Image 1: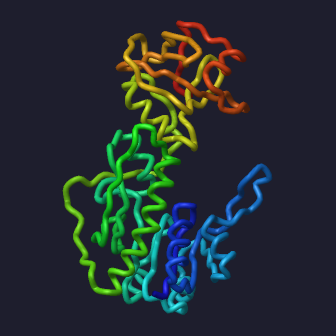
Image 2 (image 1 turned 30 degrees about the horizontal axis):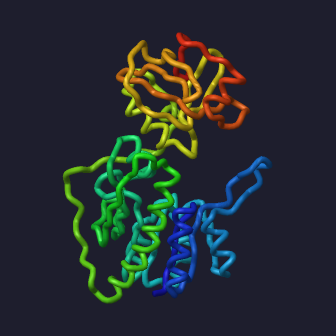
Image 3 (image 1 turned 90 degrees about the vertical axis):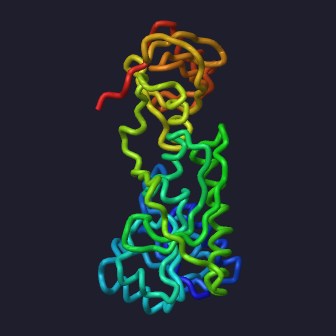
Length: 311
C-alpha cells in the first residue's frame, strides 16, 4: 500500500521499519521538528526522521497540521492509508478522511484502558498485569476510534517502562503489517470500543515523579519501575535530592519515609503500608549506584528520613 506515516520516537521507528521491510511504499513521513538533545543541546532529528532520511523517504516536520498547506502536502502524496504511531500532533478532520482507508493508529494499550499520552508508564504505575497493542481506526476523539486488531501481553514483575516499551514496539510493528494486509483483503471489521473500562493515561508531570512515602510500598515499587529509564522517581534525604532506580516492596512498619534498615542489600524505608527496599539510587550530579556502593560514599543511619521534594 502507499502510505503516509506519522510518528516520532523509537516506538514509531520500529513500526516504520516494519512497514518498509514488508514492501509498503512510504510516500511521505511526518515527524516532530528537530529538538535540542545531548550535552550541547544541538537540534537532533527524531528516530523516525533518521530512519526516513537513511531510506531516502521524503520527510515533513510541521509545527502543526492545522494549516491548509500541511494538509495539502499529505494530499499530494496520494496515500491509500495514513499510519500514525506516537506522533505527538493531532490529526485534523481533513486528514482523517483523506486516504481511502483513513488513518490508522498504533496505540500501546488495550483500549479503552489507558487512552492518552503515557499508556506504558500508567499501566505499570497502576500495577496492571497485562497490556498490549490496539490498532484502531482514528476518529476525532482521543483514542476513541473503533478497533481493527488487538493483542495482549503480560507485564512481567521485573518489567520497567523501557523493557515494556521494547516489547510493545516490536508487537506494534508486527501487528500494523498484519492489519494493512487484512484491510486490503477486506478481512478486518471495525469493532466499537466498549463504554465500560475507559481510563486515561495523562502525560507524565513533574509531580508524578515525586515519591509520596505515605503510599503503600507495593505502589511505590511500581512507580519506580514505571519511571525507569526516565525520568526516575525522586525523593529528598536531608538536603540531598536523590533518584531511586530500583526498589522492592517488603513487609515492615514505621513512620512513612523513615529509614528502618540499612545494609548491603539496600536501604529499607517505611511506607504508608509495608516498606520499600531501595537497591539502586543516584545523587544529583552523580551516577546510579547500587546501595552498598552508595553507602560507602554517603553513610546513612537508621532513623534518618526521606521526604518529598518541595515544589
